[in-house]
Length: 342
Image (cartoon, rainbow, N blue to C red; front, side, top):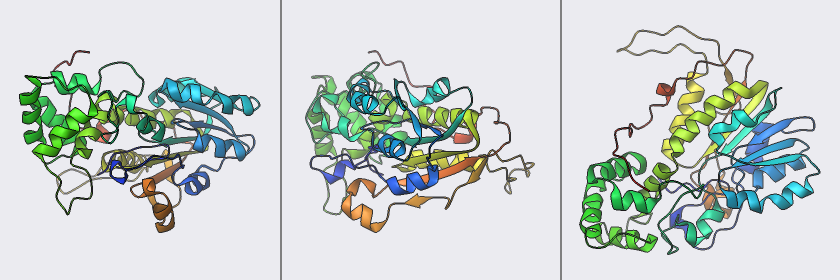
């Protein structure tokens, strides 16, 4: 599992400067079906790659981003749109608050941190660029440095293990505890350097040894899994019948959430040898195309960011939205973590 850099995503392992290239753009547009008269919500504006293409197809766009830098950077596109683009500073979990009364014809989510954020060393997302250990998409709240310097070792182990699927979570957490007792972690290089010593890279390793820890911290600091779950439930409430929900993910934790959602909303009966068969429910989403679409070999070769991308899409039926139930997502239980001060 590699670092998720949505909105033109890239693996930390790829290295080098990041150029914004919308991942799976052709496939996203085919699933979304933007057209004149439609209103599409882009929940992850980033550098505006999807939004620009949707506008070019004739649809109006409501775009959200939790990063104030992305909002500022998108003002030229707003000005050029002739009133067809509304750009709003907001988490995509709150997308229902920004939908028109008549509903939406489409919602697209490209999950993760944008290439612009990775490129800016001062944001602290990349271990390849030395900067403050921050990682906050919204530039507010608890930072990655707060977590690393203040969280209990047991909490660090759970964060690295659950959210990064890091097999050496215990060893890394204990090394962090030992080092921070004499000197707090302040920069990305401080943390990455320690991880390189504790778990040195082997010749067969495809990714940097700090990749999973950095991913776990970013996901935790920004509550990315919870945000995604809330956004999927919100999209179900505000999409018109026939409206499309299109989600592009870049690592297994996020894809699992999206897959579970569409499976649960398919209306099919479910059960196992341990549990009784559940009654069929009216489907709230019908599948669009293949259950999962990955980048072509040609795109992956031209754009290494697309290598781990997965697209899933559904078309909203006329059935009423289900009661919100977060248990369907089987999210990692991190609610018992101790309070981490800012």
